[in-house]
Image 1 (tube, rainbow, N blue to C red):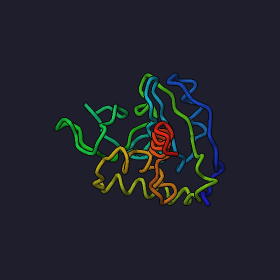
Image 2: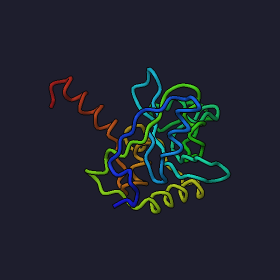
Image 3: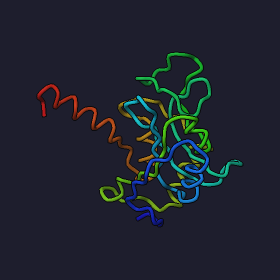
Length: 177
């Protein structure tokens, strides 16, 4: 079981203002899953909080397709990049860089009761190793996205509730439940 006191925690949403982010940065612990949400987006972006790393005080390691260098951008719908500048990568950015000037972020360790998390040290070690070694991961919205990445790091099990929910909704919509 993870050795932190955020076991199973789903925190409140934090907005991109200094006071709100200061509150989050004062409570988030290494190994926590961070969920980033943008208005109008049907998906969330996920990262692992690793604390101080590569000269950043509040670093998040996350995976995705990043357009034009932005830390949290619209992802491609498949594993193939539409433009040559978009490649899947494991990145390290500050919480503030990932969040940008819109959207919101929260601690979301909701899967802890269903899946046993690794120790916080093991979660952070795995995320940093994948970043340092520039592990090549093919991005695929269905099989290998940012949520798969954080769940691999925290639970040693690359799953995505967002993908599962989308398929459940699709089956229900077509009467295939």
